[in-house]
Image 1 (tube, rainbow, N blue to C red):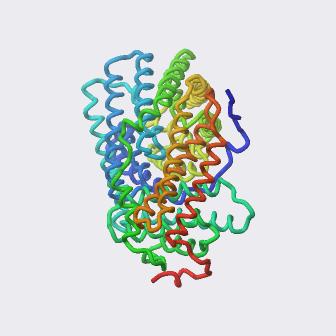
Image 2 (image 1 turned 90 degrees about the vertical axis):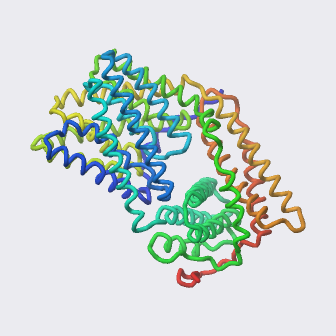
Image 3 (image 1 turned 60 degrees about the vertical axis):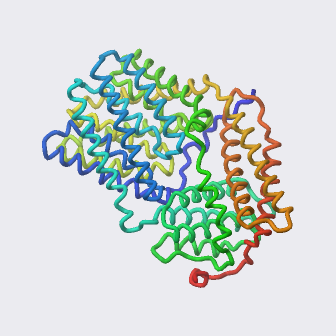
Length: 547
């Protein structure tokens, strides 16, 4: 039973910031500012803990087209308010800390599954778990619950408007940015592949994942003209992955630059017609797997979350900590796709929280000058968290931790020394107990998923090979086969990496994975050549490649 290494060297390494880090950062500041300032003017800043539940929904769905974003954000707001309502009702019905921790653990597990199944994306379940767990320990009566839930719902509606507002200026901004990112990574991979005697898997994996994500974004967008233009560009990115020696990185980068600005959509100078794009239409018609099929593989993660959160909360109570929900939320934030990634997150969480309490200690004197200062500092920390967290989770936690501590002072000033001590203890307890739970609950389904992904790639490769062997394959069928094989390869690589980081499972078919990937990439290259999609390398400038 091989056990993956638990690395330390690269866990705290800083990456480049996200291309759109400023969007959630600005959105959450605007979404939080208005309710907080209104409550401050009314002298009821103690109610800000409820409006924060709705305001923090502004962190979600910034990578989605606006039509899809509207739906996703609405579900996020409903999920946030629903979790808050359950927590407040539980708080009003019982004073038993053990019962409240148990409710919080079950809520955290449900939130984890319901965020991972549709691939909601950052910040996923962590914000939901933070709000619902903290609300379990708020003094509450049953008669107060409707008013407090209404405050959260109103703030959530405002957050929805804030996140949708940019669509008035750039209605196709998200899908343009996603396509630009895919083109940029495809260009980098093609350039590397042409300059080296062999290719590394990581750049190709990153580029393939970006192209696949861009396809998902574009296919969820509205507007046939724009969508068709972006699909043509994404086909060029896929061509660069399949046949890098026959692509033009300079041209791909020029298209990406145009997409990031406000210039007209670039149009590749090729012979593609609409009939050759029907593969994308066919994939759109098929749709995604039913929700119940996506929930099944997440069962071990749900058990880990419920068990780890419950045990972390109980341990915190046993140590006499007054806010066991901090340990619970720490555990909930750890669980990733496998044990190795969970270890990485545990290290990042501990380092970020310990640094964050030092920041809190430095900011407390400033925030106690006046409540206006408290609100403004919290807004600055909201912005800083989103500006930094895409570089590394621990760096964002340096801002999140003092913000969470300062929120407790909205109702009344707290003993800062006790807050710091309890937060440090809960962080260490939550991380330790949560990681032990991840090790204890095995995930043998990871190996089964890898087997299914391998079969899917081999079947997709066989379908493409059969079409290539035909004398005159239909262009639409060939395009659909190529797209299906490319998507299956992305899923195989992600599944293989997730399975490789799990403990206590049978040996993985690593040789079969490598063989399947190599064979599939050769078939993709042959398909591109059969379709006539490859380009002769040129050094055209951006203005020369537009029609």
